[in-house]
Figure 1: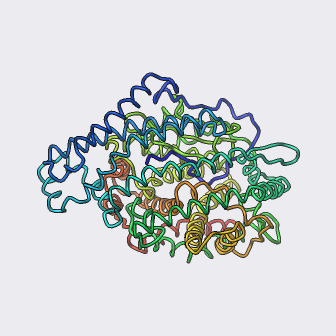
Figure 2 (figure 1 turned 30 degrees about the vertical axis):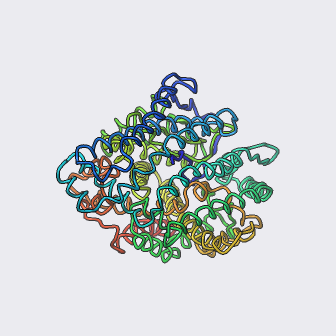
Figure 3 (figure 1 turned 180 degrees about the vertical axis):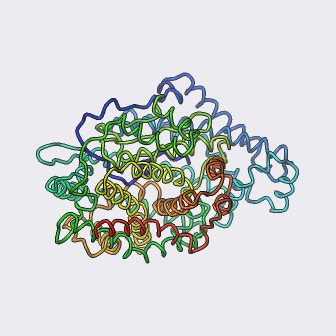
Amino acid sequence: MLHLPFPVRDAHAGSGSKDLGKLPEWDLSDLYSGEDAPELKRDLDWLEKECAAFAADYEGKLADLDAAALLTCVQRNEKISTIAGRIMSFAGLRYYQLTIDAGRTKFMSDCQEKITNFTTPLVFFTLELNRIEDAALAARFAENDELARYAPVFRRIRAMKPYQLSDELEKFLHDLGVVGDAWERLFDETIAGLTFTVDGEELNIEGTLNLLTEQDRAPREAAAHELARVFGENIKIFARVHNTAAKEKEVIDRWRKMPSAQTARHLSNDVEPEVVEALREAVVVAYPKLSHRYYELKRKWLGLDRMQVWDRNAPLPMEDTRTITWDEAERTVMEAYNAFDPRMGEIAAPFFSKGWIDAAVKPGKAPGAFAHPTVTEVHPYVMLNYLGKPRDVMTLAHELGHGVHQVLAAGQGEMLSSTPLTLAETASVFGEMLTFRKMLEKAATREQRKVLLAGKVEDMINTVVRQIAFYDFECKLHAARRQGELTPEDIGALWMSVQAESLGPAFDFMEGYESFWAYIPHFVHSPFYVYAYAFGDGLVNALYSVYAEGKPGFQDLYFEMLKAGGSKHHKELLAPFGLDASDPKFWDKGLSMISGFIDELEAIED
């Protein structure tokens, strides 16, 4: 099943006046010129015929292919993935530009159904690959270097071998996938269609979440209560979506005999469960010295006896509230990228000039932000909801980092370019760090440095602490769903149990906050995705410390790592930097950077 891109960053868009300058919009013509493009029809027709031909040529025969024939088979499969990916990228990106448009929704759904039907006969491919004996496959790799290049793909496919079902059942699940996608679309369309009224103004979800970062406390409070009211009115829909998605996952996991709800995600991330558990444990143990300590500082800065949830992302009292125009945001990020290495600036530049970014907040547009790699023969597209605050600049730096990574990895080809989620966040978080350090370097006063440090700490807490809390919430949710249907109140209680623990004693929680799980897209689109953010942040913090220590040739090593795409395991990728994510001390190294920033903030206070 091909899945669509979705908003992957749980950052509230910034606010400010509407005077942001000319915001770029996507030009999707590099994919197709429109729904009725003759090239699109040509590709759909080709895909239908090639899928049938591929099945006729290879089903039941993979084990008997010699190395050269197996290479041809793999390359044909790769071409099918490229054409299918191109079609679904076009349909999906158009949909996310305007999720409430019935025509775009139908077009995307029709494309998904056609491609699912065309590709169902190909389900045999991975199943038969997994039946080839290890020694026989190794012999073929030894015989043909070009085939051996695909060994990492084979290794990841074969990791699913213990959980593989019969060919007939695998085809059935493949066909049934469009039903699960329909629940995801219901979630997207419900979220995009919500309207909120704050101080007489009607807003979408992005505009309302954005008010939580206003300097003035009154609109923050009003927005929080309005979010709670609207989520509450729609909570039964969100509970139904979550119950259904979790139940579908439980059924599939049970049939596959997966040892835990998280196993499938760990396999797709190419990461060992014990590495994820070491990360989780390190972060949870660090809550008191990270989020608890920081929010106590923030409570004092805001002059409050108690923090409320609408104060979590509030600007500091001394923070500059001016709007950052799009041109200034572009200059800031590009300067940081070029200062690290001009090659990075060269790769990033076309995003701004060639219609590869869609930046404006528009009615019906999907919330959040993402970078979608499309296919390796085209280029990535970045979606933002830019409203002109410092956090929006950091989101631009983040998504552009993804884009640079995707461009560099494209040389690996369709099957090897895609990185596991845990590594996919490397370049994005590194891009944020470069931008932050450049802004910190330019801070003219103690106050400016304090505001920048506090903003970075908040982003890191949102990326590490908040995402691990989300992961714990999901673990609890899926465990509870296995015992039976969950009411909205049940889900809300699980949400609150992780919120209090992660945010700490400085907070009170308003009535209605128990429904704020409802709008997070990851829980529906990609269960257990969220720990990848914490993984990526910890990895980048450790990586940046190596860069800051002046490791010779760091930039070249960094580019080689990004170019590797999904062709190497995290151990291989990090070894040239002297790092190892399976070492429990690795995570402490990353977390100590956040703690060090908080130390500096406390020192500024003194």
